[in-house]
Length: 186
Image 1: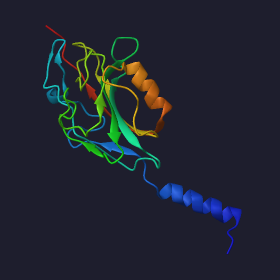
Image 2: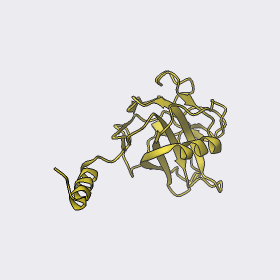
Image 3: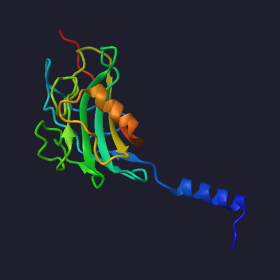
């Protein structure tokens, strides 16, 4: 039995509409809602716990061979935003990170994963720390599905280089955006 081109097109569209979108969620933070002191940096005038939230993702694009996770603040008053977390070479079987997985030594991370330098100048999760009295900043958590098993980078890789490699090997991304602000100083 041969299907007409119209039937094949309709079947293809139906298949696409039934497939799930790549999705990122968290049991500890909510999309569009403020972060807590738990996710605030400890330093630069901030005194939070500097603990990464737990993250979960599902329905990665076909062909995914590894994942990366980034945290970026586009509202930082730098002219180029602020990279708070760059984690890559997560195995394709990874679908979640436990809370605090972003600690500098990464005891909760899968073997072979790498955390590289943030704009704080050190690897690992660096929490929110906007200037006091500034408008709420957006903190964009992104999981990147990659077409390669690993990026040939180490923990000394600069954020721009990591970003370049992520974009060059991306199959898709899923994001979760939280906000954070600090009161003005007296």
